[in-house]
Length: 158
Image 1 (cartoon, rainbow, N blue to C red):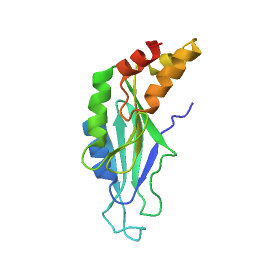
Image 2 (cartoon, one colour; image 1 turned 120 degrees about the vertical axis):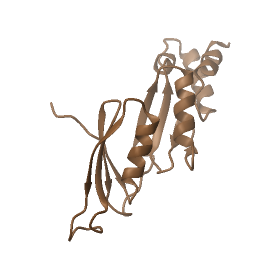
Image 3 (spheres, rainbow, N blue to C red; image 1 turned 180 degrees about the vertical axis):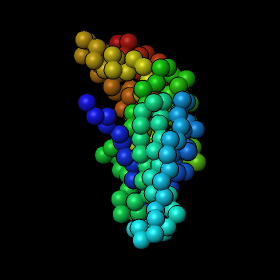
Image 4 (tube, one colour; image 1 turned 30 degrees about the horizontal axis):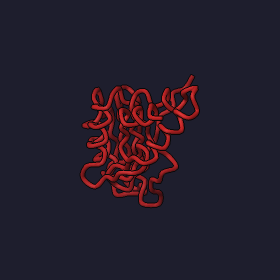
């Protein structure tokens, strides 16, 4: 089966973005950088594509020009092991011009949307007790960065 590789379109920040993402996520690296040649759509020598891995998941970034920008219709989900990981990734992704959004969503300084999700969230939101789910969901809807302990406490309140 072929691998699905996210391809992220930037104006002219593909290498900067890939370097940033590789600095945020452990076990990550840039694997290849290609450049525009003579007669290309952008100046010769400018970075065309950057191939990189985020903890083994391949990605490509392209400097395609300003025609297309990121919006919330696509996001990358960070499945965190615990609250400390949520806090670390949230802080890193929202730093230096990134922004916080509702319910665990944020944007990095390049405009790419991320969902930073703590372990236990899916189980909490699929609990067999609908009232418990409702309380957890209400708590989540009031948050920017998700706090799983606060969501569990809300779910368990009656």
